[in-house]
Length: 195
Image (tube, rainbow, N blue to C red; front, side, top):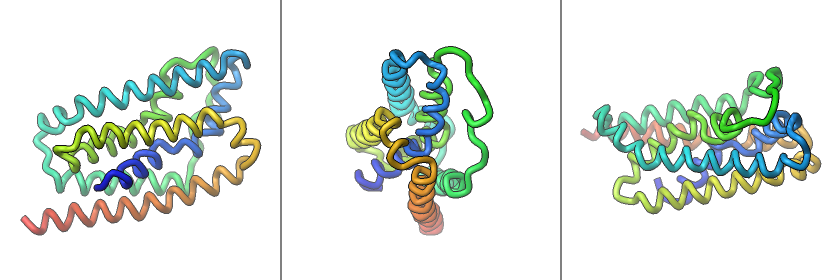
């Protein structure tokens, strides 16, 4: 997977536009003067979690002795399931659960930004871009930075796009992710059959 595709895939799986209503819902119990500081802290914590996974994820793969085509097929399936959830969402965290007090690490940093889907995609990208760890670090940083920018402007974007606009964009992003997941799955099958 090339650099631009890695950035786009990571950005889509972080799903910042789909997370805007959830972030606003969780942060409504935080005092208005603290909201921006809490949001910045959670975004930075998510980056630390993603970096730790980027640094140590390859050791997990080596320990489990997983091959490239297996990772590609599994990654395609995981991405497909994520995309289907983006296109056909069920009730998500924050719509029914109420948190008391100020969030710390959970639920904003993990799992909303650095969730299982983003970590799985990071593992997949790490395995498929062996020999280019610096490029993957830059791709992760760019995708995280773009997600952070969207989330930091969440109040403004929510005012402009409203709930329906955000849902429409999230569904469109889900469609793009479906196509990328099918391609990843097909690449894994092709590599397996070529052995």
